[in-house]
Amino acid sequence: MIPLSWYLIVATALFAIGLYGALSRRNAIAILMGIELMLNAVNINLVAFWRYLTPHRITGQAFAIFVFAVAAAEAAVGLALIISVYRNRDTVDVEKINLLKW
Amino acid sequence: MSSLDPAALINVLPEILLVVLALMVMGLDLLWPAGRKRDLGLVSAAGMIVVLIASFLWPGDGQPVWGGMIQADLLARLFRILFLVAGILTSLISMDMKGLKQEGEYYAMIIIATMGMGLMATANDFLMLYVAMEMTSITQYLLVGYMRREARSVEAGIKYFLFGAVTSTVMLFGLSFFYGFTGQTNYAGVRMGLFNPAIDTGAVLVALILIAVGFGFKIAAVPFHFWTPDTYEGAPTPVTAFISVASKAAGFAVLFRVLNVVFPVGVPQSEWTNLMETLAIVTMTLGNVLAIPQTNIKRLLAYSSIAQAGYVLIGVAAVSSLGVASALFYLAVYVITNIGAFAGVIAVANRLGSDDIRAFAGLSRRSPYLALMILVAFLSLGGVPPTAGFVGKLFLFQAAVGQGLIRLAVIGVLNVIVGLYYYLMVLKVMYVDRGEEEVEVPVSAPLAWTLAVSAAGVMLLGIFAHPWYNIALRAAAVLFPG
Image 1: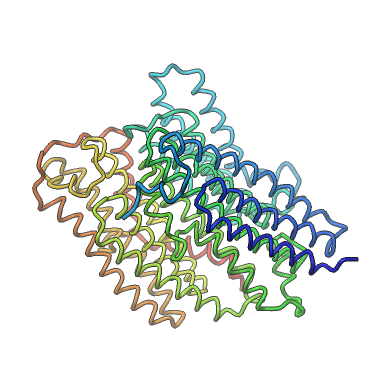
Image 2: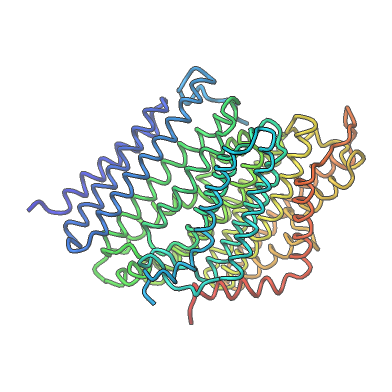
């Protein structure tokens, strides 16, 4: 069987790619995609831990399902906000969304 | 009693009632004609007062509910009362805010956010903690961006959202590792699991830091404070008030709990104390220093709220029941004080259409009572006796000295002096300066009530502090048994 650590390495790599995307992209939608990658990394972690550590209890799987649901809600709200910004400012570039600054 | 017994649901009675209230407000929004929509704020406030009374009448027995997901012990119940008070006052100050379209869903989101905070405080499981935090955050993203034709409100909303989504996901990654270490998500289970000597302390520390990112966002601690000034300035002012007090208090509620989970087994306490001490020092210093040059009152209060979070972190760094009790007391004071300050800002902005500090010039001659209420709130934020802010800071510094954190207490006192400078500057503008157009500022009834409750609470908690502090001490004892 594939060792647990392989899954954890994949998850951590995916998380790092997502975090890099979220921090470096200027397009708000691309940032949202980075966040989704990070959430998927978490899900790989949870499901891998469930399979290897506590296969007899569904805690990890249940947690992963809750993460899907919350991620969907978060994406819905995020896209709604992005649409509102686009209607107001005609851009989704976070560097041009700069009315508020000191 | 089994945790799935229907009778155990008495422990989540306030949350159940809040869901009913949220649905009721949305239903009334459909039924009522447009002219009556303003009264929805009263329905929302009155409903939450009923929930508050119900939570006193049936406090529950503190037993775990829903398979151990929720445990409403004394500490959690006190936090829940704080959130309800914040929710009630926020509903009241929303009613006459100009430019905000008061509709059912606005109040429903405030009610649901209040409920989510209650669940954050009572959560006894990492899964529940995550869901509750997101329930609070997602409704708040929407509230911040609620004025969707206002470019500033929407911009504040998207900044809050992007920052919040990234930090909460980092926190979730940390939580997944705690599940991996112990095979459990329940606080007590994780605590027992961490006794396993095979678990590497360094790995636990890394996971803890990942979690702290999420909490740092919630309480707006440095270095996760960048969203604060922008979001506070752009958001509708009642929402700013709500986020600055309730959301912050909820963040501290979970911080106290998790502190209890990982100690003393997971991470050496000295490392945690060092981390929290540094965070407290940096947070209060940066907040206070950056507040000084601000010319917009909402931005000034944003940096002030960062500094106030730094003061509360002193109580977290002093890991003891005294530390938690004084932090809890200070949060209660802060909730009441800051909502009063924002109510004053709304009154002035409604009349003059500006959040600029200069709009306050000569307010004491135009509206002496309003100016007096704002004076009380600002003196309490600054920590001048006999207000509650003074007593609260005294308790915090006392707790720090009690744990041998002399340096932290000294830096705290120095920060209070810096803070006084900019609070007094606002008061000087209000009492000494002359405005260009000296018009009287009308204060509507709900705003006046909020200001009166705030000022009365500040004086009450300040002069008769000990009964309240004793209750906080009993609540803090929950975290430090024996």
